[in-house]
Length: 139
Image: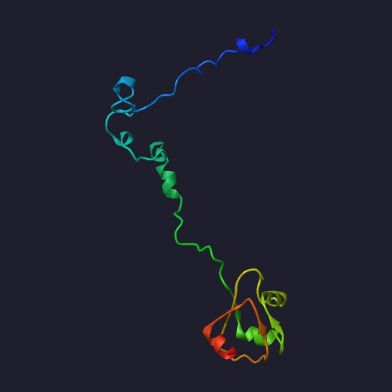
């Protein structure tokens, strides 16, 4: 026996139309729209999770609070660390800081902080943010 296109039949139950709820009384699913009368389950806006008895599980999950910024945080380098690790006329950028182990990621932003005096002379600084006190010393 071979399968031929004109002999293929729809599967059992495959010919049923989907139930269109709340489309008037003539459809047979109007008025209460198959929800019964009154009660919490008849109302709109009740989540199915609550209806399925999952409210207890929902309450056990902690809410995620707070705010997480999309901008990466600055990696902080102190003036003391720069004085210890750099010599006169050296270049100061994220790559050199990472090479000396002062920061972890050369791609993330870097900021120099500190009110200590800068003892190193002639530093060539590039791609690094600075606090106001550090800018005042370099000017």
